[in-house]
Image (cartoon, rainbow, N blue to C red; front, side, top):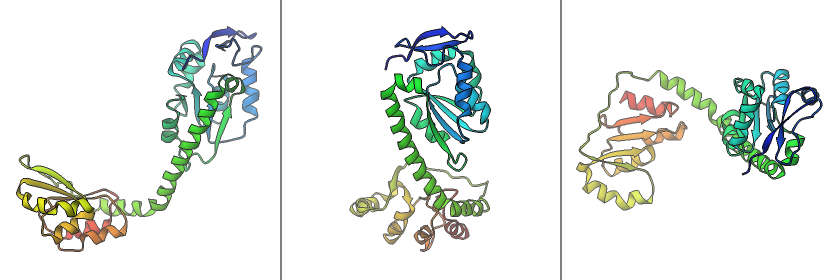
Amino acid sequence: MNNTYIGYELSKTGLKIPQFTSGKLIHSKYDPEKEAQNLADRIDHKTFFVITGIGAGFFIEKLSNKFNNSKIIAIENTKNDLIFLEENFPIIKKLKLNNNIIFSTMEDLYNNLLENYIPAIYPSFQLIEYRSWITENQESTEKIKNTISLAIKKISEDFSVQAHFGKFWQHNIISNLKQLNQNTQITFPNNKKAIIVAAGPSLDDNINWIRENRNDLYIFSTDTAYKTLQKQKIFCDAVVSIDGQSISHQHFLREINKETVFIFDLCGNSSSIKKIKKN
């Protein structure tokens, strides 16, 4: 993508204003600071803003001063655009020191949204389309809207999962922390081949091969395959369980071999962990 800006001109008030490749200016040539303040005055309070176009940073500065606890992502097309603006406009360097302000390229927008937009912390979201910038970058504006839609959909899905599972994850974490033994040491042999066993048709197809080669293998089993291997009288060297739901406990109802290493996620099912530790 070509650069968005070719240089700058001075406003009537003596301030530098970025100039688009078309020759037009992104800010008012008469009083860009007053223009920025008027625009900020019209914005209602929101906790998360996405702004198309950074320019000299006048509007972003005014908006940040007005809502100093809000998060702002301001977008330019390319990294070269960001470098040009930072090198030529002092406000940009100052704003980069603010942890609530993120300057993003089009390419990085999706990841920046995923990393920073947390609905529980920022319940209200607003896209601000800087008019002069979107006039010059109509194609980019559509891509930005699509990217925002995709990111918000992903964030909403993740947030729904956290809201649904968060309560018992938290319960498991608190319970499991009590079970921790800081002195645990695990030694893995380096003379065997490690094999990871999960439940499924391929396990049924290869169960005889596992049995025949058992002495040469170090078996890591998922919790879902553990019961199957037990039924086949195949010893598991290690079992891994990450699911925190109650159904996970059913994988450990049979007799537990004390020589097996059990590896649990911190938010794994606490009943399972208690049973393993008791045995």
